[in-house]
Length: 221
Image 1: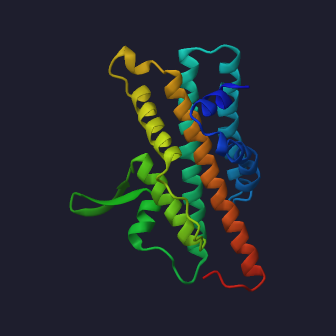
Image 2: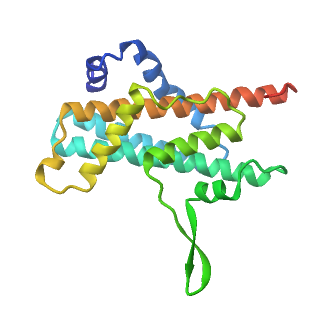
């Protein structure tokens, strides 16, 4: 039994472990259907980095490798969020009837208006990661007529929020103890990673189901 399974068992999530583990396999298949041709290669690199660090950690667990694993997990999460937003924006351009408001489009582009020397300009808008995840999932669901939207409020969501705070502590340390990653910390990051992969995979599977309904001439609402 590897570290991930041990940690998840420790957190009494055995009733959900099968679906969480299956999402690792399902995600590679589902996210590969993204319409932007460069996305699959991007996803493969992000996934490989996480897996490579995990294997290296299993062979020789150290604090440095724990921190590297956490960094890789959040590069993966932020990369997937960018890909999902990119697909939403690409599809929105092709639609005659627009789905999103101008404000939503700006947030999807991670832009905000600003003024410099009396002229209106665009500037980068950085959303907090938890809100970025919520917003992206809501927009993806809206764009693809998904009614079974993940309920981001359960135990696993709380672990994901905790893991975001752990990442922030490691990335912006103020003292030596901020760099210390306990097994409790690592467990939360592992569960948060699994959970994020599960909810994004579920969304893309829902999208695939809706596309099949459209092909058959069925209504989605």
